[in-house]
Image 1 (cartoon, rainbow, N blue to C red):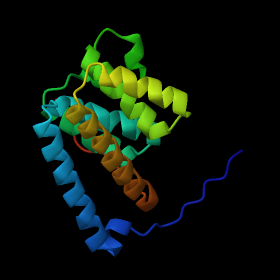
Image 2 (cartoon, rainbow, N blue to C red):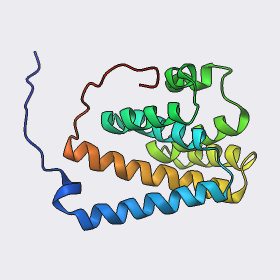
Image 3 (cartoon, rainbow, N blue to C red):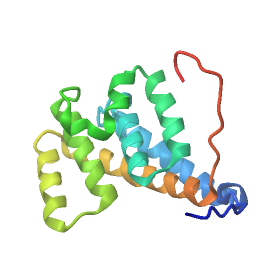
Length: 162
């Protein structure tokens, strides 16, 4: 039997807003980088969701799933994202970006990361590789902020986009 310990957490984004605002500025710069690299916003949101799945960040999963759907992503692709390798729903560029995002988040041994990077480099430009890297770095940071703070995910009314 496991014991659940409930501790009120300090929202580190509220406690040190200057640091959090700097992180928001990073996010803005990353968005500009993805736009400059020609990465579709739906792909960026899929990367945000996949990184958040790996990190088990409920707050970011909730937020970025809603955003992905608002940008036209399909429920089917979002629902099957944890098993993206086993579907035919993602194109070559998306698969390369997702593999790289997983590799940069989980930090496997160098050989696996080199393989994933080389596969991504075969279909993504240097600018796109860099932008994907920055998406992953920023999302990992936001995941940590929400996980440390235990930002809550509250129920909301069901609508076609939630």
